[in-house]
Image (tube, rainbow, N blue to C red; front, side):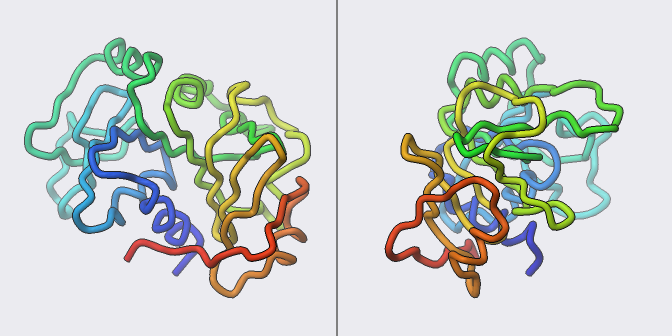
Length: 218
């Protein structure tokens, strides 16, 4: 099981029946593949769709139905499409239960940087700023390091996406929760020790006496 699948399977367990959920571009879209049986959520795409789902099989793509990153998606029966103004009204109005976003860095206060890659041409942050500010819960899906360098920092080296801390950080090594006391190490991936995570994390972590193993959706 690769890092992305571990992260997506763990985050899938955070989604509750009936949630309205936004999945960011890239790795977060994998979460839709691992929803536990009996859990039905409504996936929202900020380009104007509620009821998004992965394509049921290759060859069924519709050129008019895509996610914000331009990848083809499916839609559940009864799905609803609308314009971007309505979509961002839902986001900014606090109607999203959960958003799952990729991350470039998160600092020790739980502040996310996820929109500008140094030295790369980027069009802007898209809906990330609105999603971090507006969703009830913000879950970051990202690998723990990039080319061996920590992505969970004391202070971010990149522009921050929002002044609001995220709710949870899920990597292939651990689950971390930002709290007023600091980043709490909530769970460890199978075969990973707390000292392994500390060695690959620049930010200081709050480590409880017993850290449980990270569960994964089947």
